[in-house]
Image 1 (tube, rainbow, N blue to C red):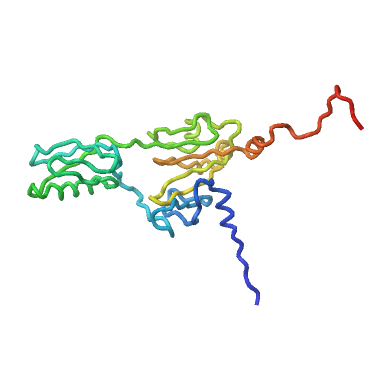
Image 2 (cartoon, helix red, strand yellow):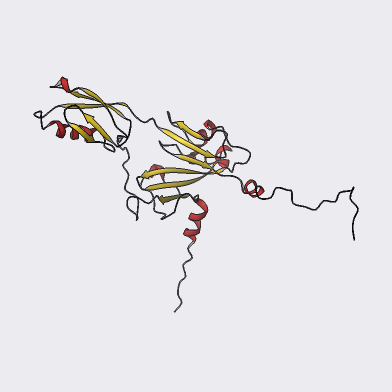
Length: 246
């Protein structure tokens, strides 16, 4: 009876598509329909569920980060109105209620946590929380572009537009770029895009829209990378000033 033989093509694909700074663990499909692609690969960063990424919400709420500023108001006890800043350790110091860890919470969750904290001294407090200062959305472009770095994401921006904002391709750049998108605490999606076709007016609908925290990596052309190790042109030259020796 013949046995079927399976060739680990998927493993080889991961090593060619994902930079060595990340460790590929799986090629699970991403549940977000707006971010699905045949060329996408899910990379595990070593945290959360090691088997598969967590399910994503279509419209996730903003989660409190370090250095965020909140304005807290009490409808029936205005003497407790206050502005608090999230410390580097994720805690805030509340007037009369001590320290409370709120990093990673949404605003509704913060309101409920504050109600519990002040419920020890106030009867069913009515609390409202406004986010007055927060981490601005950004994206990062690295590799072979004119001005690699971090940029504010203030409006809908595609990958091609993001590269233009970062100074465009350098002569050494490869037009097949990688887009990194964090889909959960422990998982990163890697998407390979062929911008040569997009910039030439082909498959323009495949030009992905950047999301907060996304990173674009523009690699070097193979020949450019190869020339680093070959400082001289390959070939045989004969100087007319030097005699030939038999």
